[in-house]
Image (cartoon, one colour):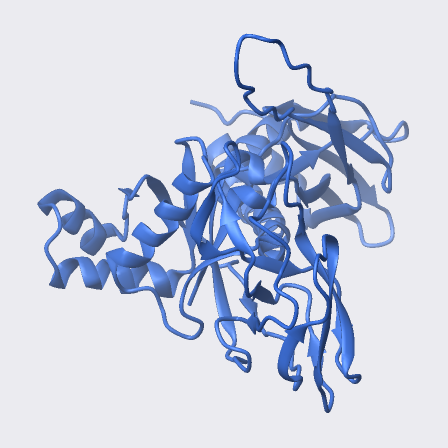
Length: 394
């Protein structure tokens, strides 16, 4: 059977398939958006669902509808380019894919996954212990408990780094689990579904270095604080509270997001902006905002005046943290937009499917007497529902 000439359309189609298969995080997140051509730096809006509270009795109680959207900036432009000979265009599709397309799309998929893994610093719920690789079912159970308490939908994913995956596979071999699950874990590292999570492995999972605040015994400075910042007091000799640090405040408990009833554990918050702790009084920017009533209630009450503030499990904890990620599809968004085709190129194509888009362009370099091809993608990533994410520390 003669070889088939590799056309731009063939390359674009094969690249799109390979790119989608190579992504891990990118294949698990929200990708719906209004399809339109945008330039780098443009914003794409995603609508967020409305939340209501149930009312008592037969008398109708009207509630104001507040539909919100979030903007995602298309600020990432990535490409892979290589040179080749004209003879290579007469390879079979499988040969060309193996030699060129798959290595190129693997690089693009990894950078997208890496950008999504960076969003773990937006998650404010955590399980596990900093510096300790997850090795027991209890860590999964704790994540499942938090997900259930926050009323997550049943489609849940957990993405771990290879060390966590293989540590758990070893734990399955030495503990009592179902035979099939244990065999799959040992032979392929495929942990399947555990505690309601479908498990995946991604080497792009990030390690987080906590802030170096030396604030001695930080306390909440003032009663009745609400909103997205909290004023603290305490002796300080320097250091920082870092974006991504996790904190709790005495007296501020987590709640059921629908009923508003308080749970027995403290609400967890994440710091959203760098804060330099060189003074005796500092203001921490946090998420979620402290809301103590209404449909968007986030916690039982404002933090206690002079209540203790705990960072990363203990006031002084500074161990680096691997941030394995548990989440639902709507926790994060990947918006990938189609790139326009250049008018001056004859060999060009663009393919878009399932809101993934990739462009191929080929040209000839007269200076080097070589043909050059490039694959391009343009996209943006953002956390849209941080409450639908959990970090599994390791």
